[in-house]
Image 1 (tube, one colour):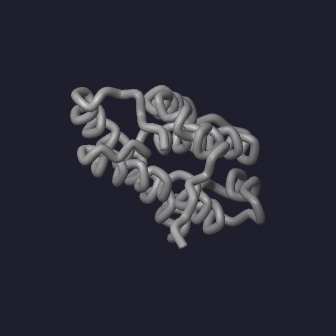
Image 2 (cartoon, rainbow, N blue to C red; image 1 turned 120 degrees about the horizontal axis):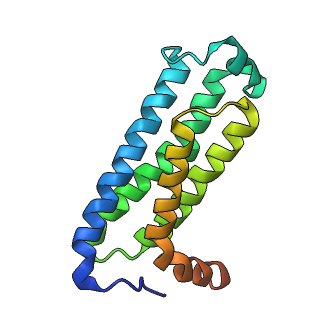
Length: 150
């Protein structure tokens, strides 16, 4: 098993920042998802018609599953990383890629740019940068999956 390349002495402050950052991302994604599903967040008729099946409910569920849940996972792992959980960097990398992917797909569907799109592209890029040390962990996991005990 490989471990993160960040030294143990610097992980405490790093992990606190990652945990807070990921929790804010998760909170905003859950708020958006709840708003879309409940109808409290209206995209207007034109943008709603551009969503898959014209469904803000489906959009809200996708936002929760693709952005909010992985961000929550990252926040939790970063919190646990104080006890040397080395998965945080790899998950930060994955969540950054998911957020950027979400924005690209969202823009392909709605075809309008808002203030949030460049902001979340920067957020995704920041998470990729934060998680850059986890790329080796991901490569190792993909090439040598852990054996499960029988």
